[in-house]
Image 1 (cartoon, rainbow, N blue to C red):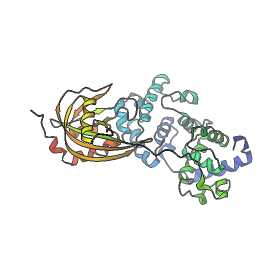
Image 2 (image 1 turned 60 degrees about the vertical axis):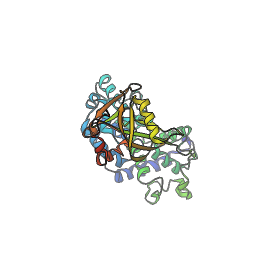
Image 3 (image 1 turned 180 degrees about the vertical axis):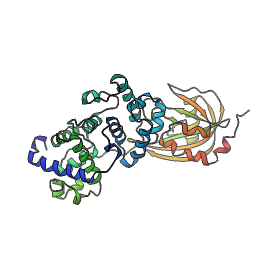
Image 4 (image 1 turned 90 degrees about the vertical axis):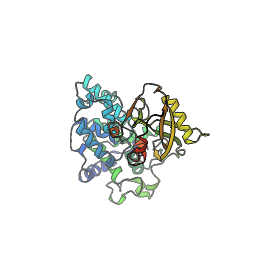
Length: 374
């Protein structure tokens, strides 16, 4: 379907009941109780690829610590990452911090109400630009996220695969055509809310949908067939190893490069296991390569499994004892020898956070009393 095929009378039959439904049934969320563009912006960044219930406590903590653009701009990057710790997709936090600094210095703390200017800020893409500008400033820009794609695909029985990049123009064109120019922010939120609460991926609540009589998929009994998707290859699994290295009652942690996956976070050193390696041998090799230290593997701690967007991790963790060598980190990285009670001062990836409590509660305390070998 082309946007031009959507007739005005049908558009009105979609807009009016949808907005009425939203006003009566939308969830009361903190970022919907404010007109502050900064608060709305923070929420939209956090909500990317993350569920509302997961975001709520992080949003409250973030806004308490950084209540305005100036406080965020002035913050240390490590402090920002610490508050964000556990929410994932850490490039969002780094870019939001950078963008706040640009707004504070170049726009005197005033978030631009022009979409093109706002879109030039670090980390601001099509979705964030349209969402913030429409909700905070009533800009006439339709949003397209997973929820909106699902609603449109079922409403109009679209054959364009929702997970194929070329299909974006199809969904965006139709979203633009449907957008209510008199209430763009409300309409965008209504489309997303409908997808989240009613037009769910599985077990959609079609009986309670305000658009069921306009929904072609519902009328045809084919709701489960939409949205169309391209079958993806199975997600690969990376086999990794990490070491809790003990020296004089302290643990070694290293900081990842600022850019890239999990940039700026701290972790226990290690790396990938080669196909012909056993985990302990891989750990000794990786620690030597990445830190310059020689260690002895003393005991097995645990196995951790974790999923990222494009791959999964199978991580084996060991207790290690420092034997010799001086820290020689490759690239612009940092390291710390820390006491166990200092570990909460540092932001770690979730995959590390999954085994850190075992260090606190397990036999590591005995290892922490080890001293350097003679």
